[in-house]
Amino acid sequence: MLLVLSVFALGACDVYDIAFLEALDAQTRDGGGVDVGPEDAPDLPDGTDGGGEEDAPDMDAADIGPVDAPEIDAPMDDAGTDAGPACPLKHPNTRPAAGTEGPDGPEISFALRDVIFDQRANRWQDVAYDIDNSCTLELTDEFLCTPPTGGAPTLDGDMGEDNSVGRELFSVLVGFDPTFESEMQALMAGGRTIVLRVNGWNGMDDDPRVDVSIGQAVGLERPDVETTPQWDGDDTWNIADTSFVSGDPARPLIRDDNAYVSGRQLVMSMPDRQRMVMPWANGELFTLLLTDAKWTGFINADATRMEQVILSGRYAEMDIGPAFTTVGICPGSFERGIVDAEIREDLDVRSRPGSGGPGIMCDALSVGLGFTGYASTWGSPLPPPEPGPPACP
Image (cartoon, rainbow, N blue to C red; front, top):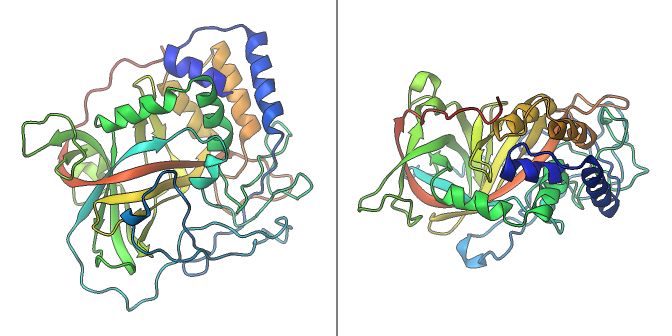
């Protein structure tokens, strides 16, 4: 499928020979095998799911503070259905016990860049979590939803990681266009970024409650003459007024006032289907509308970086299709037909947690993305730029 995506991301709506596309698609799938994945059991309440941190390539261990040793969860059944063989499930660190709050420190913010889009060589497991409390590692295991095409969902990672988008879609894309990730990274480094703001953190390794907001950067202010972000701690980002309820900066649309820090890992839950955007390699904006989504990342010792930042969640079929339209994969085109068909084959979870079961159709893709956060300042609201002409007529 993602051969087609690469064609469109970099070249809009050119038409390619169908036999060539099908042959490459088949070759890719033969190389990766046919995958099976589980679906949903109810999420565990705070304080009961397992924790652990995942490795990021080329990370300086001195940049992050102490972290908790990984914890292990046993698989959880959904409506009495066998969730597959037991394996350790990778979840964010658990919430610290009450009483460790301490006095609140100053507000801090991190702007994101260095997106991990190339998730080949099992890198997709590094930027993902188990999101359905089940573990399916073999084709013979039972799974809790079925793609509409009648095939089998993708297999989990070694610790139950769910990331069909990273494993299937993104990995094939960068296989055909090795510059795709670097082009996205350059656009984010130039200012097309997302900003996380943290209030109420005690500055310690553990804090059972902090307040986290997310906004889209639309402008830059600096104390010097630089007009581009320098990522040196002196960047102040204007936040799109569309990131707030009725443009009110006191009311962010994406906010978790019950987030926490555990072992210096920030853990934030997102409201369902709140719009975020990030640049596609062709300069268009790709829209993320996720359910059951979480942000996590390790704050380093002097709070100048957030390492191993992960966005995980569920991307419903009804939302991912329009997102491809915005980047030029046009409805009604030959290529879009292939894209839509392949998305249906790769659906591996339910968009609503706990709604799966034997014979229930999968309606979403599991997704994981990785970033690095750089210390910056959350600035004042500004209207976003006027949108250009639509990529599709």
